[in-house]
Image (cartoon, rainbow, N blue to C red; front, side):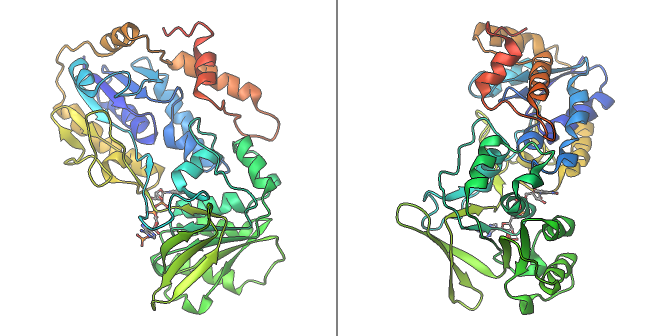
Length: 415
Ligand code: NAP
């Protein structure tokens, strides 16, 4: 029997477990997760008002529920168990750790209060237990840097009024902050032209349907090209202006050069394609320029990913998802990639009679690590649903400690 450890329970890890089970029905697959709860980007990255995208977690839940799969939540590789220990316990180990760190622009003022990376901001509005509040108030103008789908998510979440979050699992603390901001203007700024924007056009078009805000193109004459995104932007520019409290202004061909402020952000400076300086006043800026992988114990990423050849890092060590290819593609991209890697692992993995999960449990018990198994996750899941009010999505537990107590009881005993 093969024993395989997958580090990370986001979409890449869960799709991989699913495909491995199809190819190796007798394998024992252990999914390790540093948070007490599974599903990574689905739970804490996908926008809270896009519940249909989040619904894939039901598929992943069924994978974790399978007899051959064991979930080890609250187990951090590098803190609770070393990677070399996992390599000796399992026949194969897979890094499915995602890309958890915000890329930086590397321009002056990036650490001013009011400037935040999209990973941190998205984690906050999704109720991530380690997320911190943005720390600024009286936000009238917000600048969003980047022309990808995360920039669209952030713009939409900032632009919505409270009633537009019906059915979402947006974090209560974030909502309390949002409704208190006198927000009037959201600037979405790309360093290249509209035709090069990485928006998915239907995500962009959704901004035209909001109640509290309307999209505006600051230079419609500059909208060249015929891509679906350019056509959508043109439709924004040509539509009859609605009277809304908030506008979402699209700017193109502006390269950010500095965040400026006295103790907190006051303006963002850009350079236009013709070399002119452009200044946008803002009390808050969110950089939506991509992510990079964090080290996983002794495995160190280079250029934001773990170096690999078609998913293979080393003998018996593999990588999948954003940790493999960088932060690109949509959720289904992971399904296709996981299928390919599962085939490779199934071909290459030989049973080495390694102890697998039994060995991991023993080691965690010796170290007094409190881990959350699938039954513990189900207790958290039930508690969150029980807390959820009418017209709301899941009311997530807000701290890792609360999750552990719910999963394990006051004694904190793992099974
Ligand atoms: P992305 O699509 O790669 O967009 C990143 C943006 O940041 C690009 O416009 C890029 O410009 C810009 N950028 C990078 N470095 C910059 C710099 N130094 N200065 C100024 N701008 C810079 O990444 P993302 O928006 O973070 O999304 C990550 C992945 O998740 C994508 O594959 C996305 O499609 C996916 N996603 C999908 C959905 C959905 O389907 N609903 C929602 C959210 C995210 P250049 O193009 O010039 O490099």
